Length: 340
Image 1 (spheres, helix red, strand yellow):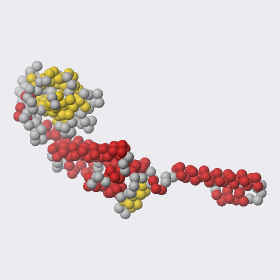
Image 2 (image 1 turned 45 degrees about the horizontal axis):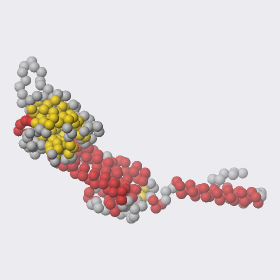
Image 3 (image 1 turned 90 degrees about the vertical axis):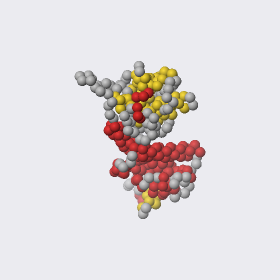
Image 4 (image 1 turned 30 degrees about the horizontal axis):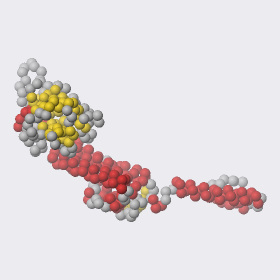
């Protein structure tokens, strides 16, 4: 006789068999009731409730995601910017590429703020997303259509799915910004290389000097006031003294990235030429680079800036001593260089 509890018809036959005594019938009835309760509990534990699943009307298709984890898995391939679309940026100028990167950063900040507000205030993600125009979202990977479908869902019970979508869209934006940044750096590097003209005469049989005087052709306005004087690529690891007597900002390029040294409220600061973020300098030694231990930490996406790129020693209010310790070089205005 098969006594398996996994086959309901077999179980029913055992309960109704006449050879069981009344005591055994009672025990088996209790066992059957316990099995039914266990099976129902397991079903509730391992099968998500119907009203917690995400059901999207997506075009002519109905898509169902039982859990946010499965939804995140389905969105994973949308987090990367499609490289086939890079060609659309080829005609953009360096200035336009820089502006596009800045605009994407602005949107990234907005989405980061949205997630933070939802966590802190407990507000519905649906209500917070309603503040965004659907045209804000890219049509790449059908992101715009996806957020349109998510915005049609009622209530806050699907907020975890909306949160997953926002997180993956933020990764897509970071990927897109990285592609634009790479293109901008390559474009600016080519512009700088094509415009670089040595202005010194090299004597016969003598090695070339480590410092090179150059003239840069950069986006309009970025070097205004200093570009006529020419630029000096700092010699590797050798200190150069710079004057701050001129009240105009001191333009510095870390690799191809523009920075300024200027005064904010009486304090000397290093200002990122792209993000406009200002970091005060302290009296004495300041290390500039991507490393977290630097006094001036630059954007980690500036891959050609070394972790420790430039050392700035603040001598006094009118003098700096700078040393390049990078792989890709630092360029300063020749007119600001003081004799050692």
